[in-house]
Figure 1 (cartoon, helix red, strand yellow):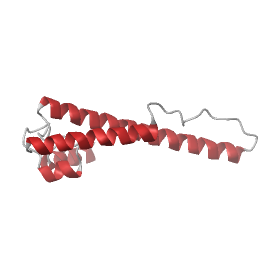
Figure 2 (figure 1 turned 30 degrees about the vertical axis):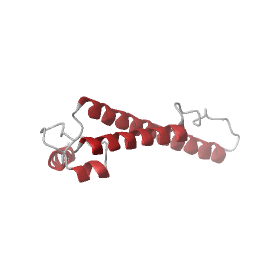
Figure 3 (figure 1 turned 180 degrees about the horizontal axis):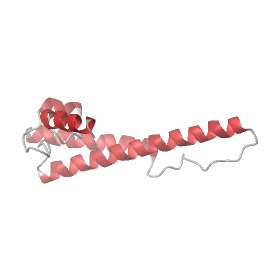
Length: 117
């Protein structure tokens, strides 16, 4: 990937981080402690909502971590290099999923191996 495109990707990654931070903040403040309800159905609905909110926050936090790691790889000069085999990851793959660390061959092998474990 050319230097200019890498810089554009870095801006895109920072933009996505800013977007996620504006949506979720730094902590799960929207994930509140369970309240006590007399009606067990209300309590179950509130618990379900609380778990759903926490799951969403955790998923977004993990995405921010992956975005920051991609920026570190750009800074280190290893962005777009497969972490397993060292081959270049095609630009189309990086544009589709900017946080990938494996080429398609290694990703496929990893997925096949995980099916058996």
